[in-house]
Length: 334
Image: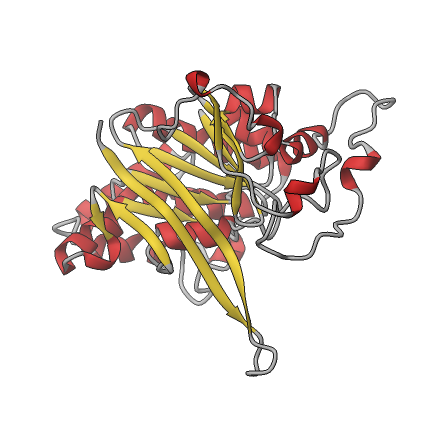
């Protein structure tokens, strides 16, 4: 089993407050572990609402941020200990697609510039003709016509076209992992299926592992094999996407699933007791979901529950499941 990209018990803490008097800390991610395997090229979802730690995780996996504790490794090497050559390989083989398909462009350059730059930086073409052929092939793979795309400025293209160009840019470098951070949240609904299908095609045809970061459980269910549900920086639940979405165990996951719109106008999306105001302060003493949980118990506010494996492909951080017999548990990472 080849582990490409790995987060090993990672914690990231930020300092808050502009003065010494009000200075504090915020734990954005706590004791998080994840393995992306190269031999089966998985599609893994990281799901959760705003403030759950998704974007922090993305920046850690890309080496933009470093953890306060734990390790981020690529092919077994900690990112902080990489040689310049190893880091160059990492930068080429782990590519990112970000949320805003317009913010990554320089409006003064044609879109050709964003595609040519990585080819020049990594010396992937020997001449301009070879560069052009490589770019055109990548554009066609994501469903764009080169003759209708190249030579234009970013504002002359739709949001969906700009986002597919960014997928083509990642594809140019022949990556082994793509980290897609909310890649369809800022494009219209008509283009979301096309963009997601492009990502899934790259996974199936080229064997590129995909980490899909989203707040949308519907697209996660359609696209992914496994899912990690984050809440305030901790894993509430993880497992195969079918089991987690169809039979959620953690109360927070149940809340997210119940929030998915359904075609029945008589059915309420969310039960009132599940969305009551969060009265629990941002304390690390207990479960971070205790202030919103309809099943809260006294010990929930005293000590945070561990991530308990309830089956070979499921784990949940909740005291409702701490009585599961040890012979049913498999504590190896999913």
